[in-house]
Image 1 (cartoon, one colour):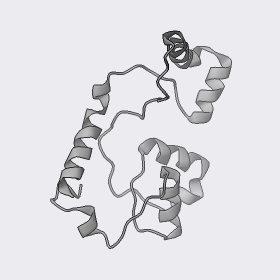
Image 2: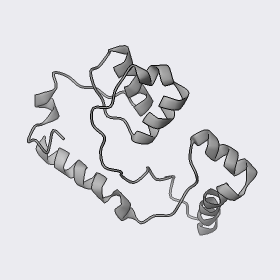
Image 3: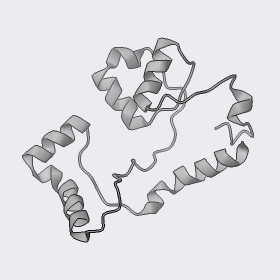
Image 4: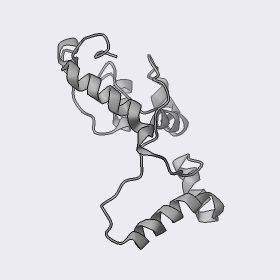
Length: 133
C-alpha cells in the first residue's frame, strides 16, 4: 500500500523490525510493542480460534485480495520416486484418518497442486515494494 502511494517504508515509519513470524506480529501489536504489522490471513484466522483473547486486542485495518497459500517447500530431492511419494501422501491426506487429524490440527482441508502463477500477485507486490525503496 505504501509503494502504491509512492512512499518507502523507511520514510513512512519511524522504525521497523522483523518479528520472524506472523504469530509474533500479532503478539507485538496486541502487547503495544508496535502499532501495526502485516499478517497472513490464514495465521490470523487460526490465531483468532486458538488465542482469541490475544487477537481480540488487535484489529484488521486492511485485508488484501486473496492470494496463493504458501507452498510446501523442501530441499531438492534427487530421487523422483521420493518426491512423488511425498506429493502423493500430502494430496491423499483427506482420505486417511491420520491425515484428516493432521489437517484438522492445521485447520486445513487438504493440499492441492498449483502452477507457480498462483503467486504472481505476490511477486508483483514484491517488485512494486522493492522498486519504491
